[in-house]
Image (cartoon, rainbow, N blue to C red; front, side, top):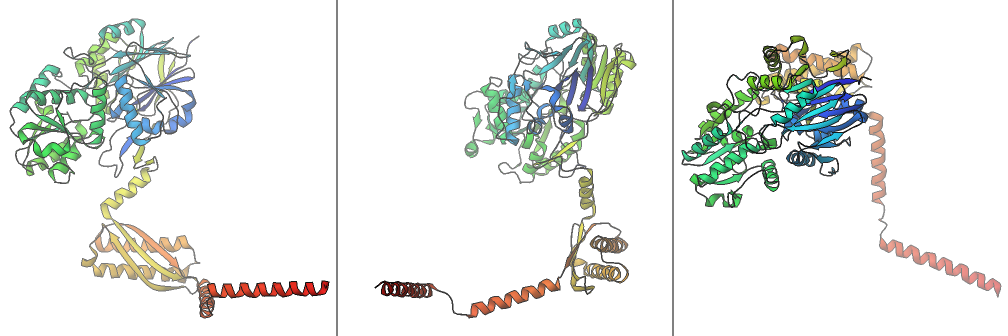
Length: 604
């Protein structure tokens, strides 16, 4: 009997980051990665973006587990928000699980760790309808893994982030033998990394990168500020090696970096010579030519921290003349403009900039040739390009066709798509939740498109506030309207504009009283419309107009006056102090004794 197979795209396609995919086999669902992405400039005030959590409301009871390929934020960043409400087992390699725990505890300190399970490339987990196994891949983190979901209909393989590098060291090597074994079972569908599909040149070997960083450190005589992602363990190791060989000490900035580095050291994934790392209290004692500052910034992103250093706003470090800022990570295309702006700020502050990504072809992701080699090795029946923006998915498809695949067997998807296996082919079926969930502070999903649109308007033209007090029974304005603004005009230089806005508020209220039955909503809307028209006519801009209309209640006022008069009358009377209390008590006792004595006389 055939199985019901469905592949659901929850995030990670037609975008950069936020990887999460699901494979359903009968009534069991296997989640592959649970990542986040960092917002672009259009998402004003948003901290991070994660996949649609409504998926877990609809299908949470069917989820057998979350399986992680590696410990970068684009693979584990959504876990804190998922595990906040759902007790789902999480599986990953030793380092990946430790990084996932750090991410989860950062958001929820009380989250228990009993949901996390450490596996390795030799692990195979049998579930009711399928089995899940793993294979070693090459990425910028050690012990990165690909995932194989084995079904009766064939293998469903998810690569995660990967590349091929024959020079990779132990802990980073791809297991080609295992790939061949999976291929022999018959690969039904391959979900493959597309991030670097448009790369023309092959990635430089790791030994070449190490020598390049070492020469950079040797040839600079001043202080070096190295910027890298906190979770790029291989780059951090290369910086440590180069610093040790050139007689430099390393200072780590940021809590994220410290946690990740010390976790990797504890697990044996980082080799750090004794005395290499120094504390902040030792910085003044170390000459500039003997110091490397390793900067990653909040959430592992170094560019904003470098900008703060250049503008003297960083809490610890200020870029000065003679500093070399070594950007040791290859930024994505989406932040190239930010890199240029950051470099300009650094030069203005007196430093110089060197970028690894300009001089070397280095990436943690497969090039076009790597992708074709994987297709040739795995021989998948169907290919689903994953992990990348749309143009990269399209390029990946073209590469697959060049490698001999039928274009009809390559599926270009979007978030929310669900592909169901029917009669030997995948067909689109009912979509699943695939919208963005935006994280703003501690709020999860409470900021949507309407709020973002309001923020955009506020950022463009500002806000205009008009406050007025009315008496609706007498139909008159009690006090002159008060107007204020932020982000619209400078008030002190625009008195005439503000006075005109006051008159517009008065006119709108008077007209409403004269021609309409009183209604709070209509009154505020009339004020808003009239003020908007006036401001646009005078300035050509449309700020957000916020009318604040308050009411005076005369009956309530008279009652309050009566209460105050009564209170004053009571205060004019003699105060009831401790002496009064004692006197009253003596009188009470005297009356009691009199009654007792009278009773005694009667008895006599």
